[in-house]
Image 1 (tube, helix red, strand yellow):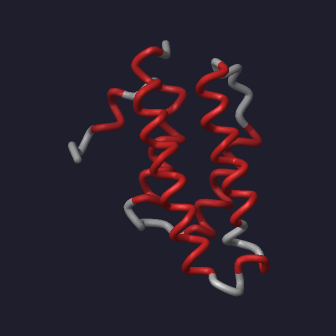
Image 2 (cartoon, rainbow, N blue to C red):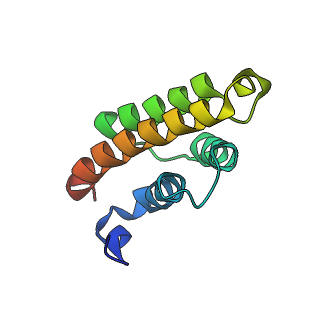
Amino acid sequence: MDAHWWSAWAPKLTAYSLLIRLLIDERISGKEFEALFLQLYQDDPTDWPVHVLDVLEGLFADVDELGVGRLGAAANPGRAESELRQRANAAFGRLAELTPALP
């Protein structure tokens, strides 16, 4: 991947794109991603277009469902983290398609 791939993204989505890539590229754990993503998402005042909001809310729901940072995933944390990476990868792809249309 180009070293500056994120520069083509809409500026407001850059924080999300970088965080998601860190997870996908296994530079951070699912637990770290969960903490950072939830904080970023909950503190984000942006009035996103509905199609972008759908992707972000979907990833928020995935993070909540898989709960890699909670005891619920303790039975099989590797599986939960792998599933989170797959879902984050799908969200990244959808956001990559949407970002050119954003200001």
